[in-house]
Image 1 (cartoon, one colour):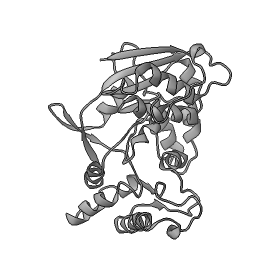
Image 2: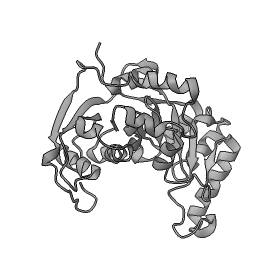
Image 3: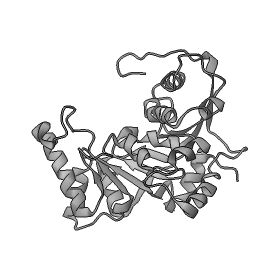
Length: 293
């Protein structure tokens, strides 16, 4: 049976299925200081440990000061969040990239820079813009605090499968038109809730010509169109970005990984529930009004 990229990743991570509910295995759990305190508290209250600390990436990025690297440079509530994350990561054996660490940064930037996000992964984080990582051919989406606790405890998550939406962009972009303009034009076409209930696969020669950072920009805003997640099939651009990074496979493991990643594409006859096509030449520089695309 022909499958979409989303279908392939989903099917590869099914632990069990009951009716419309599927228990998915989670490859990478990204955490920060804002959506984890209650999750850790729930875990501690039940006497549980984090099941796979080695698959968890932690940083401080939401509540930190923009003026200083000191933890006490922000308000009392923010300081408490930061100190709580420090303690929880120490207690549960999670590697934390705190303020002041050379590799600390915005979670959706530093995790790819570490090589922690790879094609075919399932990736979750207590943050709505987790869809950013779909640029790597990973199924990535935001979750709530109770779900964060569930992933901590089990490395799995109960989900219902979304529908498939294909967004194809073809042709050469006009001078001055950027990846941000592309995704804003797509959302303008879909409507700000037009992709609700879908996972989007972005494809076409325009998308294939983008850098990884540009693809991340596209996938980042999938949520603004209402989508669960956004995906771009991995290719040589993806592999070149990942290779040699701290958490990337090495040696024979790299060769095996690339051989698997090369299978992560939508089959020719795969079914999409909806298809939207844009011509790159028609996309103009975009502006938005307030927070509504």
